[in-house]
Length: 232
Image (cartoon, rainbow, N blue to C red; front, side, top):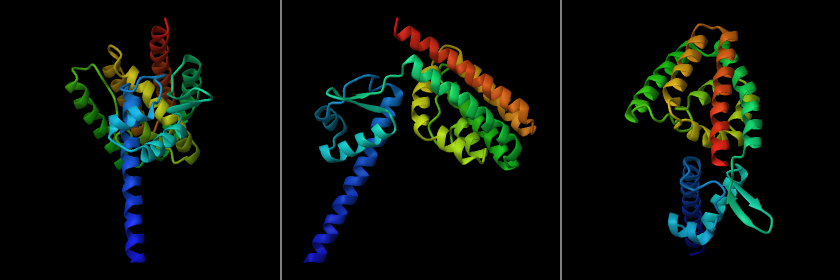
């Protein structure tokens, strides 16, 4: 009897963990896409109803999102979705330009030929996806289908990878989701990605770094303009 109770408890805990993980993924996606607006207050009862989840797993999901800085806990005011202000994003993009520039340089030195070929094929997939939006949007899901993630991994530098794909990554994805829908940005960003990939394929370390830095700097100018328009 004791064994049956233990098994049942373990199964319940596993179900709760799985539910919390699914809810975490759903809320994260909604924050990044703007479905949950920046600065909006986190009301547990509303979210529990919206995502069809009990308070326990929901709180676990919220805690993980706080660790990623997508949700901010304000003393005496509760929790809110993070707001991407100009100062925060300028700091992030400055760090991103340096880190991703070096990642591109190292990728040109170290990336195996088969992975370079796969990178080019990935950009073909991105081009097709952009075509489906009539060139109006360029948003990459996270992980191996993210061009920037692939290059960070190819750098072989764990400090670059941990910084780019740790706490910064989801905040960057929020900004990229906005800039990716900016008029004419999608084809421009794709063309720049192809230039970077070509420099990596040519093993031109210096050019790969310069092109990546230029790409990130240009993205920052768009994000800055978006933020300024939002706060006018």
